[in-house]
Amino acid sequence: MTQPVPASLQFVPTTLAQTQVIPDDTLTAGVSFPTQDWVTIEGQVSPGKVTIQNVKLPKDWQKNKGFGLTGATLVPMGEDLGTFTLFFEFWMPSQVAAWRLYWKQFFQKQLVVVKGSAVAMALNIGHPMLDFVALGPCVVTDSGGLDKDEMGTWFHSVHLEQYRKAKPALQKAIAVIPAAAKAVPVAQDAQDIAIQQLQAKIAANSDPQATAISTPSGNPPP
Image (tube, rainbow, N blue to C red; front, side, top):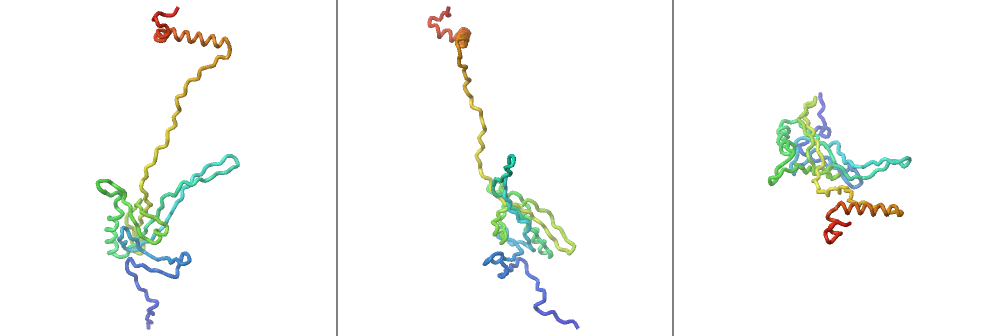
């Protein structure tokens, strides 16, 4: 005769978008770690089960090669944009139907029109892990179709990247060589002085305007 399964060992399915908090499981002293299998986008709860994967917060560094035995050095270039993936799982037809509406509303479009101007479709995604690392708002960088595993579960991956508005920056100054006055050679001896005087006389004779100015009567010099 089959023995009944004790109530403590019976499997009780959880409802959608159910939050479980485990007070004893902590990341750090005094901080409880929430176990949450859903996200909110603009306040709307996601269908099915959601797992946040591959959270990355890159820091940008510039490597400068050293000379000789001095070795290379690193220069901080600021924080890069964070990325992560939302992995959705569905095992009921109603979840798939809700997902289609959810996907069209939040993940299908790249731009939206606001007051006649096209702006990025930046999403405010709510989840304790994303709040912990201050990752948001975000935009969709890749969103394919639904896939199905051997157990009959449908799944879908949405890749997102942190969004920051463009900031105006001043253009870098273009280097321009200033117009420098041509240097006049300095006479070193009597011969150089005689050559400069002869060059000045030839230049004055070849310029009629200079000749007229040098002779008030307008007659050419003897």
